Length: 121
Image (cartoon, rainbow, N blue to C red; front, side, top):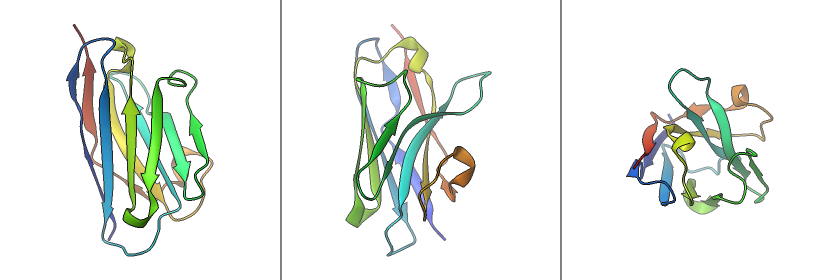
């Protein structure tokens, strides 16, 4: 069974940076799509960024130019570098992975438990 484990969340001041990491275990095969979603209190979970094994990426408009997603295919890991963080970035961030390219949140096969990111002064 594939498991996703996130790390790197925490408390940061506005304008600061954090790097989230997610590692998939339980398989020796390459996952196709990996991504990050987030859910703020009282809101629905939303896309942050996704990346497929070929390297194509997709970002939410709210994070473009500030966040960068990257992956190490051989290790089934995906990172999210978050710069110039804003209070509205505060949320629980979830890692997601799928065996095939996905076009929506419902297409992911596996989800991590989430890691809290809090942006506050």
